[in-house]
Length: 117
Length: 112
Image 1 (cartoon, one colour):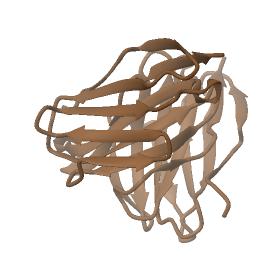
Image 2 (cartoon, chains in turn red, brown):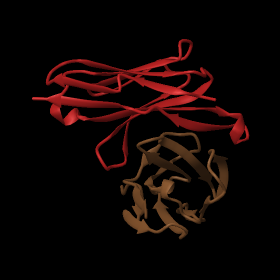
Image 3 (cartoon, helix red, strand yellow):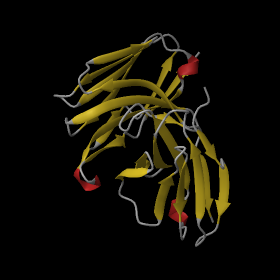
Image 4 (cartoon, each protein chain N blue to C red):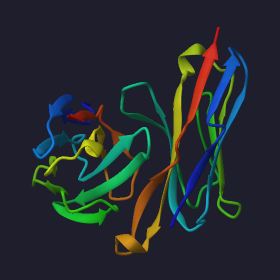
């Protein structure tokens, strides 16, 4: 059974800092990994999707890497801003025998980020 | 391009009742999946539909069910509601099954 862990659970930094959020997973046979942000009481906003054959993806100030062999992904946020304050979740889509051998997503509990001015 | 639309946004039910939630995917997306988010369990996968067929199902009791229509819109139903069913129910759509997920704002269910 896939397990996804995100460290740290919470992070508070001053504006302008570069950040690294971590996501680890137990089963390396994944289909893809996706990073999201969630604002309080809202749905999830997709940030980056990394397919299993890829090593990294970039979008603006965000860069996500994937290392399947070690079961790790990192989300790098450059020059953080107060608007980046949110909870960041990673989701790993992997094979689930309990679901009839289909690929289902497993989510981490998230990293709650506060960027203060 | 309109995003994923979920209705209703908020609802209050009492134990034993049933509830139906609706999800309209992004135009052209044929895959719809449902999730339950609670403070205690986090975000958990319920089920996924593609072209009106349930492809995957998470580890939830049979009280949780869903369906997808020919226009890709989806509904989920929870029967015999329990207090523990209080949660934010999220729907996501994707172009292909197992593709990039795009979420709606969710339906917040409170069971009294």
